[in-house]
Image (cartoon, rainbow, N blue to C red; front, top):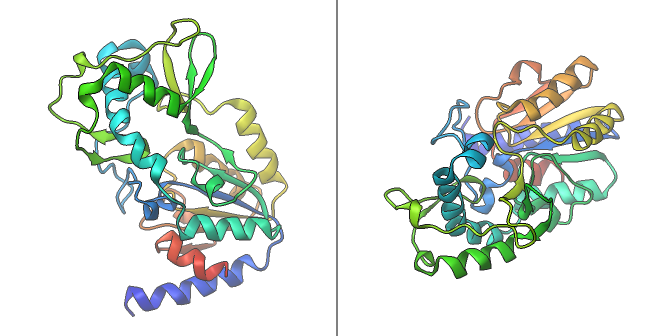
Length: 277
């Protein structure tokens, strides 16, 4: 049976499976946003498609790495800010409004669940549209940061580059030493997008909020995540240890396939549009 015929059958199976439960903990990953034009990091085997993201340690300690991050983000951010929710986001928002979702937890930083109407959302890894000072904790919008970057780097505006995950862009061959990164307007400290970088931990209050929701759930649904990052995988481990049934919708392998009660290998939007209709 070919894939186009298999998706409706498997999506119907997922819909029947979900209908048995009253309080489902939902965890989403990058595969939930690929339908909105935001690339993911990993292939169907769970391997990196590209160089892994910058680490927190390199971002704060190496001025060249810091400038390279902000230069690439300066070019990549407009594409993230212009992205629209896709069928997966809309299906989950409708389902959450019905009262069957104990918590919607996302590893994504694009805010597309909220733009689709989901509320509340636990942004496990933060939000790319917020910027914070690492010295005084002053916050600003990413739109404000973008204007500051544009004022300091007019020659960089309009550069063409391939879109990369999480608001990044491929700018190979450019001299990042010429890119000027603005300091915090309040204290001159270092600015960072308010997201969890590799090498950082998820803020504990956020983790505890999600953990409490998981304890109040009777099933778990994973959408569009390979679960290779421990911050998401640990919730699946916790669900399994608590005896909760687990369904996974993802293109390709995940770290938790052996823990799943039901695994649907399909594009998130196509599957959820049917399963949650």
